[in-house]
Image (cartoon, rainbow, N blue to C red):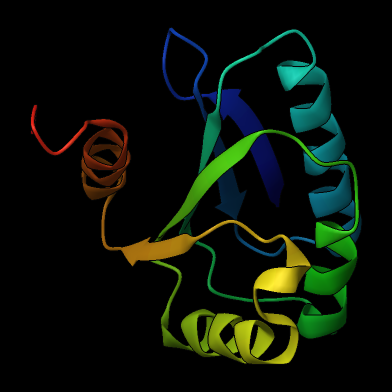
Length: 132
């Protein structure tokens, strides 16, 4: 069914990818290109929410595709928060981190159960401890 890309906030600091049903790596690469265009004129840190609550199927070749995605155009990426990614995706992410580690340049990634939790987590990561 595909992937949609949109700003999740009016201040243009959070991008949300909504994964719906069955999607392809080509669609993910197109979504990444769309994100690149969206952030072209933005000079602040961008956090990313990937909402997988309506899609729990990964196309084949997940580890190799994840690596190729990290090698693409870099943006000032904050954190990635995955909503309802599922245990399988969490395990694959752990494998990716073990294989490539911090040298991959992949942002810190967190897994939550709802869009509200994702937004709250991003807010907490942006708020200095003294103001939280």
